[in-house]
Image (cartoon, rainbow, N blue to C red; front, side, top):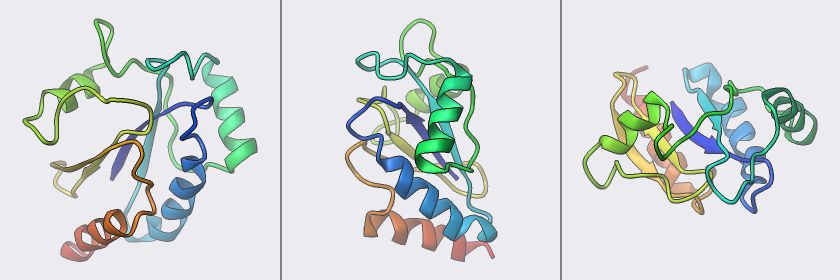
Length: 137
């Protein structure tokens, strides 16, 4: 599983395309992407849940799970991100920007943190996902 905080008005927003392609390629092997829109960085996700869903569908044909908008840092940080950020380094710590990714194995353990500028289709990321999928057929 790949957990990612997303935003519709970010320079990294085109990563939605690579995320969707990765999801389509790997979903039958049990891989899923969980996207959590957040407006914590530069007001880059100001829309409603409905507007965000429409944007992701119409612009990037996103079919992986897209959740309601949350907060990934600060006093109103959601419980999931409270848990993720509490992990020891190098996994934990607040996301530095939109499109911070957390790779989770089949047992629910966070095994890697992937920083925002690293694309989801980066060869090292793909190799890590393939290894995790192959480890538990």
